[in-house]
Image 1: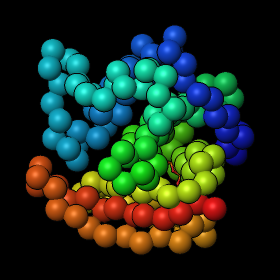
Image 2: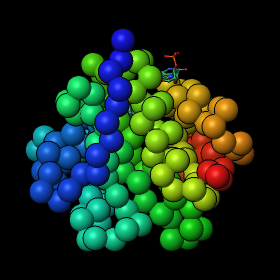
Image 3: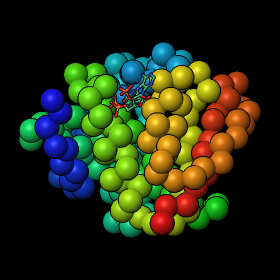
Image 4: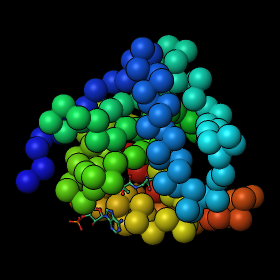
Length: 161
Ligand SMILES: CC(C)(COP(=O)(O)OP(=O)(O)OC[C@H]1O[C@@H](n2cnc3c(N)ncnc32)[C@H](O)[C@@H]1OP(=O)(O)O)[C@@H](O)C(=O)NCCC(=O)NCCS
C-alpha cells in the first residue's frame, strides 16, 4: 500500500539535490527526447530561473515516508498567462502506486485558474498518465502540435476551479 504523500516546496538550499534528481529525469526522458549528456551532465537551461524568488516559478518535492519520491517544476507561461507543470518526475521505485496522480492533483488544486500541460507525442505513458490525472478532475481540451524538433506535443488546456 502506498503511504500518504507529502508535498514540500524545494528551497534554494536544496538546489544541488534537485539538480541531481533532475539529471535522473532528463536521462529517463532522453529515450523520448534523444538528449545526450556532455561530460556526464545533461543541460537544463531554465534551472537558474527557479531561484530568483519569482513567484511564477516554483519547485516541489513529493515524499513518501520521508523519502524523496519525485519532483515537479511549475511555472506560468508569460505568453498566455497559463500555469503549467513544466517537469514532473516520479522515481521508478515509486511508480504505479498512485503517487504521481496524488502529487499532480495536489499541485493543480493549489492554483485555481487557467492551466496547460504538454507531453511529448512519443511518450505514451505520460500521455496516459495526464489523461488519468485530468479525468474527473477538470474538463480539458486536447490538441496535437508540431514542434521544430520533429517530436510532436500533446497539449491539454483546462481551468482548475
Ligand atoms: C509518468 C509518471 C509521472 C507517472 O507516475 P506514477 O506515480 O507511476 O503514476 P500513477 O501511479 O499515479 O498512475 C496513475 C494512472 O496513470 C496511468 N499511467 C501512469 N503511468 C503509466 C504508463 N507508464 N503507461 C500507461 N498508463 C500510465 C495509469 O492509468 C495509472 O493508473 P493504474 O496504475 O491504476 O493503471 C512516471 O512514470 C514518470 O515519472 N515517468 C518519467 C517522466 C515523465 O514521463 N514525466 C512526465 C512528463 S510529461
